[in-house]
Length: 245
Image: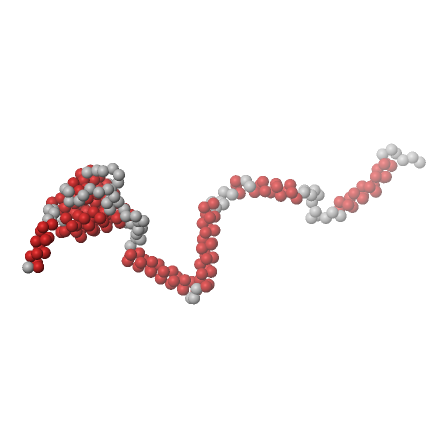
């Protein structure tokens, strides 16, 4: 008895087919049929997450920097409050006390002065007349530049005294020296001259800021000196002799 041509090969193939089916069933439902390598999968995920659509609501670099700064401040204050008697309340009291002391010192002493290494000179290298210095002072005053206005007006005062021969023209003279020398010729204005010299030094070398009142006072002194008559040396001698007699 012969078997037809297609039946015998099919019967012979049954054991192999059954073995394949058994192996497939034994794999389980949790294991995927195809396993990808880890590195390509990680790279694919990184490329996907780097797209702009996933980062539209991310904080900016400034926000991240501020958050890091405030975290640092919070940690610092936390450590300080732990070490301070009374905790956070004690720390606040200490900070307020320190600020109050600093404010009191600032109010009492004012802006610290920078003492110049050498005595400041009054004029620069280019000589100008008193009228030129007055014009420059008024121009600065019109613009509210009070420091420059005070400087130029003080130079006008000294130059006017030199033009009247009440001061000898001398390069390198300081404002204090000019005020002291002019006070001997115009004793009635000695105190105002010293104040003017001090204002000049404060705004030029002491880091202070002049005000409109400072400039107006100096301008008034300039006008008064223009009308003042110098005291004669003989007058002082006569006065001393009269007081002795």
